[in-house]
Every structure is written in C-alpha cells, then in structure tokens.
Length: 280
Length: 83
Image (cartoon, rainbow over all chains, first blue to last red; front, side, top):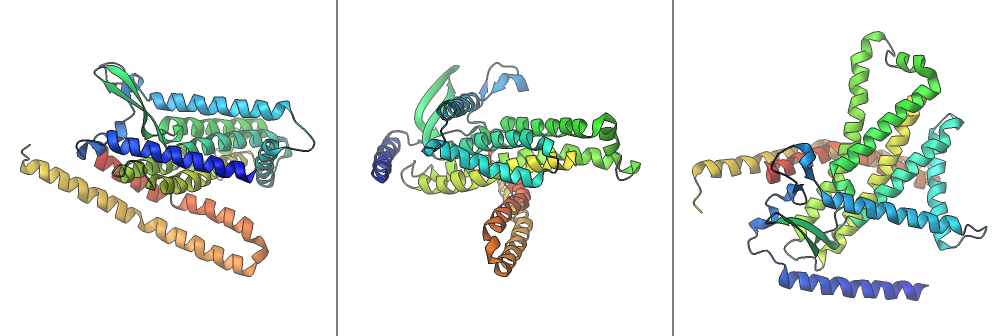
C-alpha cells in the first residue's frame, strides 16, 4: 500500500512540474497590471447588456458544485452497496467521519428526538464544504472567460475555483440553516412557544431579537466567504509571478487543507450551535 | 498613458485606505486569538489528558475570533481590486 502511495505522489509531482513549466513558458501575461485588473470579477459572465443580478452568472460555481455533488453521490453509493462487518478502507474512512460528527452533535443537542436530523444536516454541510475547500486550492485548473462575446474555456491556466469562494453558495447554506433552525424550534415548542420566544426575556427586547436573528446568517456566510475567497485571491496574486511552479503547493497546504478543514468544521459546528440554541 | 494628478490621488487614497483597513482590522483578532491561545495553554498545562478536546475547541474559537479580521481583509480587497 505504501509503494502505491509513493508512486502516486511521484507521478503527481511530475505532472505538476510539467504543467507548471508549460504554464511558465506560454501563459505569462504580457503586462503585470493585467494580473490584478478586475480580479474580483474574473470568473463572472455577463449574459446580456442589461445590468441586473439575474444576468450575471458564474459558470465555474455551477460546474464545480455539480462535480462535487456527483462525486459525493458516487462515493456514498459505492460505500453503501457493499457494507460489511469488517470495514475496508473506504468504509472505515466514512465511518470515522460519521462517528466524530455524531459524538459532537450528541453532546451539544439536548433533545434526543432532534439528534439524527441535526447530525444529517451538519455532516452533509461538513462533507460538501470541506471537499470544495480542499479542491479549490492552487492546482492549475479550469478558466472561463468571455472573448469577443464567446465563452472560452481554458484548461490549466487559473486555479480551480472553489464553490465556497462564491458568496451565493455560502449565503444559500446559511439561510438554509436559519430556516431549518426555526422550523425545528416550531416543531419543538409549538407555534405559540416559538412566537413567545421572540419576546424573551421581556417584550421590549423584540427589535434586538430580530436584529440578532438576522445577523446570524450574514456573519455565518461572510466568515466562510472571506476565508476561502480571500485565500484564493491571495494565492492567485502571490503565485502569479512564478506561475504555479513551486509555491502553490505550500499555499495550498495552508489555505486549502488547514484553513479549509477548520472553516468547514466551524461552519457545521455553528449550524449545530444555532439549532441547539433555538430548540432548547 | 499620461496620468493626471486626480488619478494619482485616487490611487494614493485606495492604497492608504486598504492599508488602514487591514492594519487596524488586524489588531482586534490578534488580541482575541492571543487570549484564546494563552488560556488554552493554561488549561492544557493543568489537564494534559484533555489536550485533544481543548485543541479542537481552541481552533473553533480562533476561527470565530478572526472573523472581524477577515471582514477587513474583504474590505481591503474590495477597495484595491473592484472600486
């Protein structure tokens, strides 16, 4: 098994170096000011002349989201089909993640009726966000640009785009957690109890409660977006001069693996904490 | 390309603004994460058998404490790259 992994690493490094040299020879920008011009709008495509929110899309978010979703479904089906008493490597990996998340959720949620739904939500969020953060590091990946009103795909030029570096994805998940926590609160306390919980500890605190509830999804989504998007932009700017030769591996190790995993854990933990605060 | 004084002033304002946003915004998270790290070290020295749990919670608290720094990083990027 160890020989296989070391062979895999050697092949990976050779491919990485060859791609880096090709990049450094052929894709160097002619003007260094081109690198940072419109960096925040680099992947966004304007569909028509009308400037509105529904005519601007980011195709890479959609492509990468569906890639990750299909990958997760394939993995789950392959693990679930041959489920054994003596686990193989894939099954034990899945089991260890589930075990870790279940213990955390069980220790936070008081009501045993809500442990399993909360566990499902938190684990789904954790798996999706951690995978998208890890692949959205500094590998030479796919690029989408508009050249003369045609969409042009370029391989191996920019970094892989992480879906969580787009605020749409994060805001969707934060709003889903917001809605789910209130639905659980209605289920746990009844509708009257839920309405009454807005007036606690006294009726004059109602505006404060409303502002506090609205601030939750905003801070929840902006934290993940800032970490991943900021890391992606930092990696992009810092490594443009050497064009993916050596440095991206280290930036990827920090921004992709360490920060990405910690932020995925924080996102799902905060989701569990919001839900448990609402139902208790 | 000829640059007028107004363009130079705009670029200067952008640079100063981004620098101030990032520099001042990094003070609070620095103090907060220092506090969290110090108390986590204290707790680990008192109870060495709890190291795993304390490290996980310390990382989560760190990530929550640095969110204001992340917001200022976002503002600095917005000023520099899109404004």
